[in-house]
Image (cartoon, rainbow, N blue to C red; front, side, top):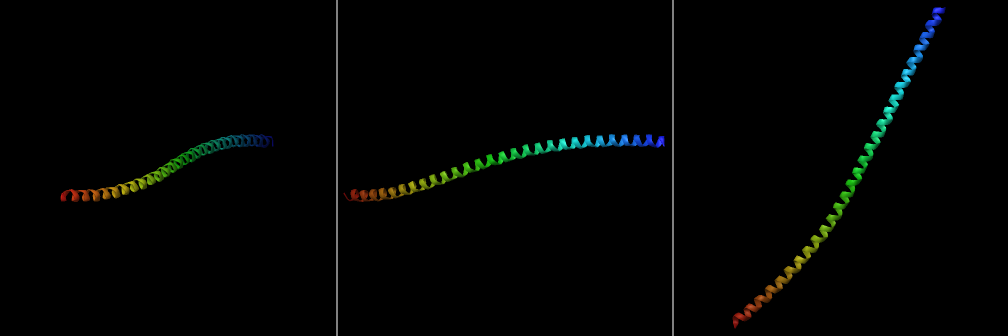
Length: 103
């Protein structure tokens, strides 16, 4: 009986040690999981910041495109005015030439 009691005490002691080692291992796993979670959150935040920054750049590009389209329309309008005036000047010059050629 004494041997069984000692053997039982040793087994209980080893079980407690094994349980303690398991707890320590679990604690390390939990700590590593928290570290990974924090790193993932930091990475996600950086990605979110980059996306936000890219969206701002795309908005700027859209605004510049709108301005360029407006300027292009204005330039086309001015070109049309110049063509009309050139046409009128050409007409006047033809009349002047005809008039002076008759003299």
